[in-house]
Image (cartoon, rainbow, N blue to C red; front, top):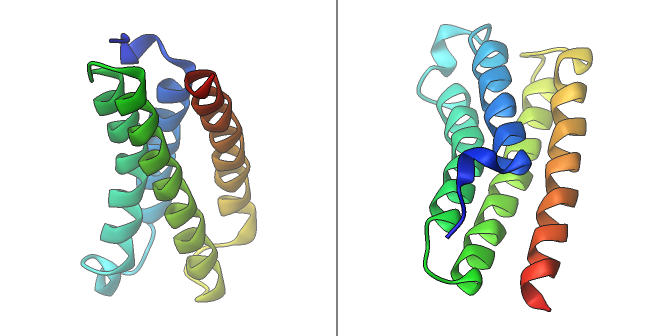
Length: 117
């Protein structure tokens, strides 16, 4: 069992979730139950799955939840790109978040590899 609040990957995921909330608050109101909701759920899912995995009994279980978090990061990246393609947000607003998502994925793969050895 790991203290998730001390994990840098969880802290970074929380920063991304906060930024996504700020960015998505500028979306049109007709997207409230569409893309805005989906983007926010994906962002929250990354940190939530890291935290849930950290609280599990084995490193194998933690590894599984890290895989789910990685899937959520890919999902969020896709939704951010779609938001840009739909002209809901500018590229300069999403690119820093995408860069942070890539960093999280690298951290995630490092942790997964650590648990695989």
